[in-house]
Amino acid sequence: MMRACELRAKELLDANVIASADLYEWLKAKAANDTSIIGVGTEQIRVIKLGEGEVRFLEKVVLFGSNTQRMEEWENGSLVPQDALRAAQIQGISRKYELH
Image 1 (cartoon, rainbow, N blue to C red):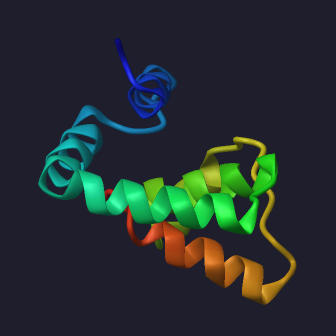
Image 2 (image 1 turned 135 degrees about the vertical axis):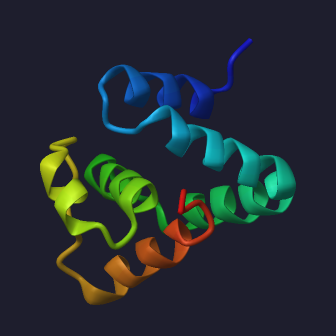
Image 3 (image 1 turned 180 degrees about the horizontal axis):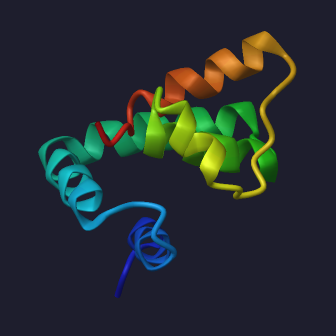
């Protein structure tokens, strides 16, 4: 049975948001450090209680990092936090999951 992150990856591939090469690199990195990243990142997300728009923002940052053009091209319902501390928390979490 597919996990939620694998299902989401398939949705992103189907929508041409990410390329298969992006997914391959993420899976390769994930296989190398799966338990530590997932354990710490999932715990941080739970603790700061992200809203749906913030989760979508995290998704964009994880997928595209500093590539603002790709971030702007994909409208996924994300909400950039107005609070600088909140934005920094989300950026910090994203570094654990970045594809590149």
